[in-house]
Image (cartoon, rainbow, N blue to C red; front, top):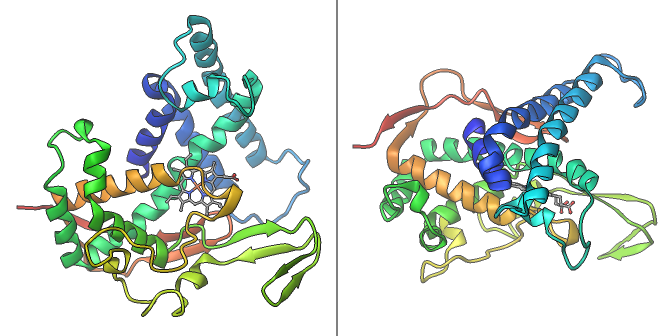
Length: 303
Ligand code: HEM
């Protein structure tokens, strides 16, 4: 799943240059995985531990592969109709970005296109397996999609309302980014609380989403809560899976589009079930977020 999502994300950023960059993107992901593994020693930030040297090598390899792409696009004037192309054009806010600024920001953005979506996809597939009726409804909706996925348009996407509701419901119950942090630059009044300047405020989407004042029967998986009486998308209560405010997720629309299509295409082709054996667990860490662990599913072709 992660591989498929990485291919989609990297193509979205770099289109025809994606194949050259995809292997590096996979390495960048691994670097983050390695870095979050607890080590027995916590070294000061400046110590070049083997893991940190590995991270630096992978980041350098990624920027070494990206630099010639940027230079070729700039010198040919064919900037490209993708995210890199947008970054190469002057924007009203930042003007023309220097090459180093683009090289600095793209490793993080590249990993963001598939890292959190992969975690969300794990929860979605598990719910398709555990809720066969919901999966059948998604499959029925997906029947309207063109046979060739490349012909899918935003109108097709817009017609997948139940599927979008299901994705939102999974993200409500299992927000991959379960903890958000903000720093108060000045003393701030927040409801009955006075937040001192310089304090870190932690906001927990997981508990907000499971609060019965926000969502009735909050522990129940109910995609319908995201649809109004006419079957259009509704906003039932708090939803912080993509954060909020000026630093809210920049990739919300992309993530929702990719996850909705992935869910629809999967449910339409396969019936998912849980094979006998240990129940999948979950892992919760501040950096990796809330993710399934040991998830094994059986996929049989839908008749
Ligand atoms: C299911 C998928 C995703 C989830 C749950 C998610 C969630 C989040 C959350 C919770 C934040 C922090 C928001 C805050 O503190 O208020 C964030 C930030 C961000 N996300 Fe996502 N994200 C997802 C997919 C993506 C994708 C596909 C991209 C594509 C580029 C992306 C790019 C970013 C960026 C650039 C930021 C930083 C925004 C800033 O600091 O100004 N995310 N995301």
